[in-house]
Image (cartoon, rainbow, N blue to C red; front, side, top):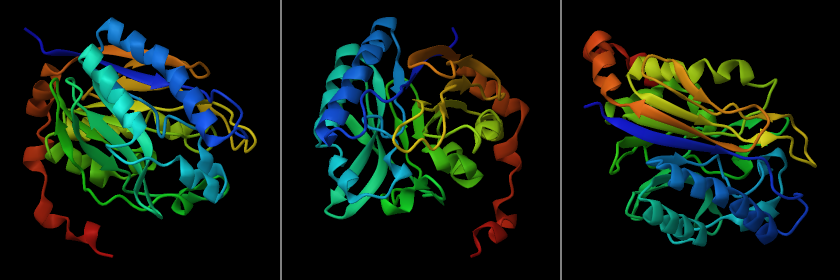
Length: 289
C-alpha cells in the first residue's frame, strides 16, 4: 500500500489596514486564517503550513521599531498555544511561522513545528536574512537563525523548514535532505517583478537535487501603505521529480491540498543516486569565506 500523506498550504491577503493597532492586525489575520485551518482539518489534512509571519503584513517594507511589539515567545506565546489546540483537535501537524522574541532586542523569523497530538516539537529560525532596497529590510528586524537545519520527526513524515529568502541557497536545502527530511515547507513573502520567474524554478530544483517533496507558500495581494509589489500567491506542492502537482491561484486567499505519495522518495533516490555520488571531500571551496 502506498504511503499517502495529505498536505495543505494556506495563502492569505492582509485582513485589515496596516495603520491599525498591532493587536487588531494580529487578531484580524488569525481570525482570517482560522476558517482555512478548520477546512484543512475537516478535509483530513495531515500536515499544514501557514505563510511567513502569518499573523501580520510583510512589515519589512519599512523600518519602524513598532513592529518589534508584534513578537511572541516560542513556544510559550499565545499564537503557538492556539495553534496547538487546532493541531490536537484535528490530529494535524502544523508549521506556524511567527515573529519570535528570544529576549528583549533579539528577534528571529521563526517557524514553530507542532505535532498531531498538539505537542511542540521545535523551531526553525530563518538562516539567510536579506537586505534588499527597496522594501525588504529584514536585517532591521531579524537576527540570522542559529539552530541549524533541524528535521522534525512528526507523526506523518520527517519535516524540514526553509523560510523565504533561504530558498535561494542550495546548501541549506541539501543539509535538510541529509538530515532526513521527506518534505520541506518554505513559507514566503515575495513579490512579482523581483523573484516570480524563480518561484517555479528554484524549489523544484531543490526537490530534484535532494529527492524530497516541497511545499512553497506565498502571500497574496498588495499591502498598503508600502505597495512594494504584488504578492502573487501561486503556492504549490512539487514532487521529488520536480513536478508541480497542486497550485493555488495568483490573487485569492485559499487552501491548497495535495495527496502526496511518499513512496516516490525511495523510487526517485534509487534512480538518481545523488546522495551516494556526492563528494563532500571536494567541496571545501564552498565554505571558504
